[in-house]
Length: 367
Image 1: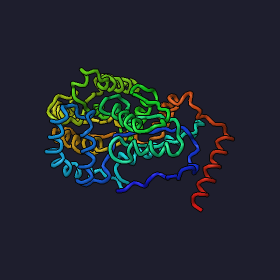
Image 2: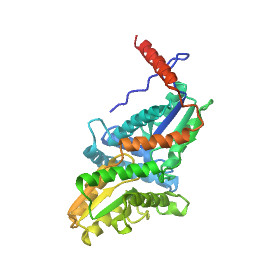
Image 3: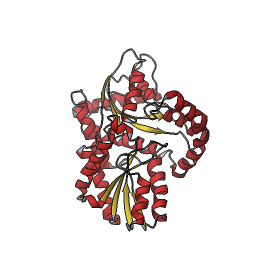
Image 4: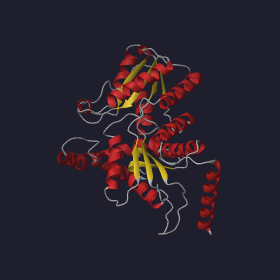
């Protein structure tokens, strides 16, 4: 799959965009297509990031290029193929749709901003988006990671990509960064709304399992707040849903390698629940704002199979926030807080004038 390039403009030619402020919504990334070749390229970038795998560089490069990239791409490609959407990778599709919804919500609030999305690994890259924003005349950029809970392996890595681009640019735009929003009322309310909507239509299971992406246990000891922020999100969500402690369980998924990761692990926990008499579970992944391989394949396929094989009777996966209106509204409110002080608010007359100029420029570009 190929991605259409952003509109480009010759030196001295006015860009179509009229805003000098932008919001760049950054997600983890995805392969361009579900093939071994595309997975090899994607995994080399992803697993080659020292923020993601924190072991001695030389040792890891030998393992990565000598073993993992020779074996894993074919297996991963088959998994991606099982969840691929007609429009492409689910993570890219939902990220793009949310960015569109975010732009509409900010515009409705009177903010004149350019909203784009980017991927930390794969396409469209953070560097390519920043190149285009600079070319379009943007002088202020708010970086919003798609990760509510801060982790050095995710949030900090996004910032690394921005800093890496900035190190090669002479005239820089002004940057602001959103570190985390694990306890943001709008985010928690959007999660609760989606779950309650699901329950109203399908009823509740015996237990709600909140599965977050795992990270090595040592990161907690090194000062990473991720573990604590996951648990705070879970507590606030449970309170919003009116759940007592015995009605929900926090777990961590996607363990990689032999080292100890944050526990309890999701799949073994589901197996134990089934074996000890829990007949039905609802599983939600609050740390993933958009459905992806880890939710659609690892949870809704692999974890489902494990729970049912262990004796469980009903496994319900509740989808991520994706592009839900409640989430787009909450993210717009969060973004607006961080945009405060930048000249993004426009009057109705100014907004109409800007739209008219953009339309005229666009018309001229097609003639």
